[in-house]
Length: 291
Image (cartoon, rainbow, N blue to C red; front, side, top):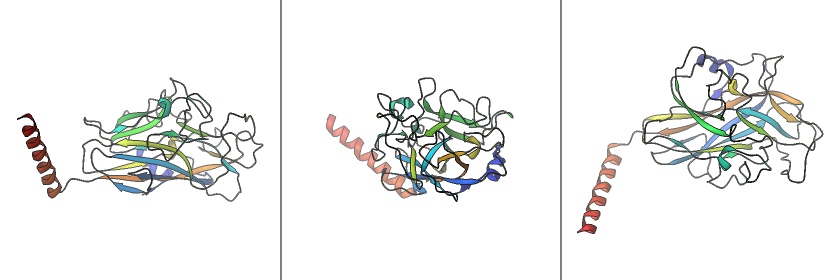
């Protein structure tokens, strides 16, 4: 696990406000079973790995809950050569909201088949043209839109095809929008307000691994890809509600991100031999079955 701050991201051609007041922490976790979560897992080709983002308030105020943030999850060392890594589908194909039919959010985080924004954080609706999806991007790219070396998965809205900082992706406003309603504008169809400030589950995605071994995949959400850009200060803010009578959340600051790792080791000679033996047994069984 590593902590991603502006100084570390700058080496990849990204930047962030220098004088931001940090009041939020985003922790990425990974799991092999959608139940036991940690900052690192070891997985083999063909396995599915689950990733989730937890958001916590770290400031000195006493907010009543998370209002909104926008971010762009990324995964490094992505395998794009068949049989390639595969991002599993988001609920409703990444479209909809808390109140859409069908829902555009994960209604049960414990369900291993549900991926996307987690209710009640689907306040903002997405359409077919702005659906949440994955982009596979290979760097380094053009000087005006540098993608770090290697191949990456980046998750954002469909219309944001450029890497973070590129054309159409400078404010971060069309990343994955995480937001819930206060009492302002609330209707009976809206999910209940989540009055939680620590370890809030806001987003989950799943990846089925391709056959590339000997790599470590880092799950991240670079701070330079956050939204809620303050045009006056240049800070990319996270909003928290001080009261339920606020429309957008008046407690504001920036975030730090703790990443998670997916380790795909090189098979040992013993495991390779076992795989070969298993293949031989299967072949013999098939021959006997057709005899």
